Length: 296
Ligand code: ASP
Figure (cartoon, rainbow, N blue to C red):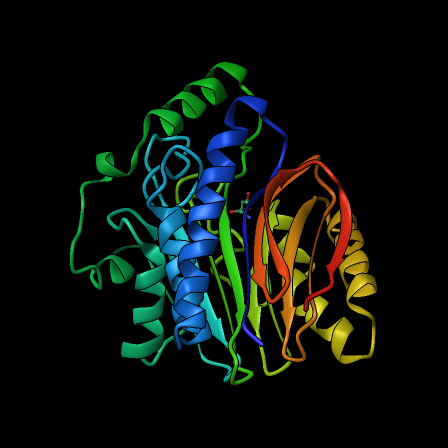
């Protein structure tokens, strides 16, 4: 069964941005699902969906249009992980339009899992100036953060999980982090187990307060709940509660090797999209809670 589920971040609902979110989600999930149903791998599908959202600066906080640090730079994190246990990730990248591709290069061309800063940037074959990663939206959000004098915040991280017909799984997540974060801050996104996870049974991508995802090893904890026999609904509920205990909120998208698919969030809104036999959905939804979908 071919299934693709994506997210475009969990956070607050913004009516003015809802349409650009929905259009960006539709484009990304359609592009990834076309690849998946044309014989592509789960990896191809998640990379296609995530690169589509990385290239959408007005809706999402990833690639071009990533959040700006307190010193006004864009520093990007990304991770890809497969059901064969392989993983690649980058952190603090300042020169790439598509950090998810760099993450996959770490996986395929180095003996490592995670490269940060200059080491990761050296893999970029088409480097851009950091200014090229700032969009009008990321500048407005930075100025708003400066004026507010508040803690770092924001959403719009992107992610995708896929199950291919052959039973293989992949998860990918990409983000600019949070507006006003310290330079050098690495969030949960590029840390396998925290913001991204795949194993032989399940693929998970998270979005929300990264420090809480790290402290609760959120995506791996969700996978462990399933491995110990919890239903998908209960695993999502437990992991969302674990985020709260760890001092944050957020959301997850999940697909299992036996074809179960669901998402859950405890923020006011979450952007998501699904394509599976019998299911075509994409929305910026305010239906906070756990959702397990029935596929055909
Ligand atoms: N989890 C991301 C981070 O903390 C942000 C988000 O998903 O909104 O870097």
